[in-house]
Amino acid sequence: MSPMARPPATALNVDPLLLGLVVLAVAAWFWVIRRSNESPSGSRQLALGAAVTLLIAIWISPLATLAQHYLLAAHLIQVLILMGPVPALLLLALPRNAGIYLHCSARASAPRIRRLVRANCRPERRK
Image 1 (cartoon, rainbow, N blue to C red):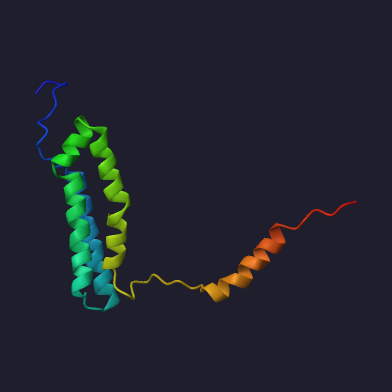
Image 2: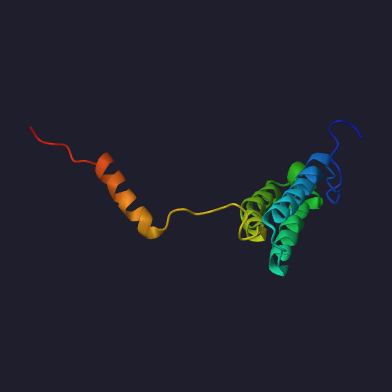
């Protein structure tokens, strides 16, 4: 293939780096599950499966070839999928005690916000 030739639009993009990232995401999920001592529910496994399927669909399928060599619209679809449902599905796949804790509630944060606003937004005094 000459340096300027394009691959066929239906060619798969088998990039070892992207395949490694998918495998790394699945391995990290198994590590978190093992660390949490909680058996994964069916919905969490389904969320992980959907996220991995979407990653493979945007990085390995012909959509990746179209995005890289032919259509900007295909690249924008890749970005939309990668930034939209994939992170949400990966978060849904995590167990409840995965080490992600929200320490502030709405009641606890309201006084903090008021103090912060008062300290930083004082009106100027007239002389």
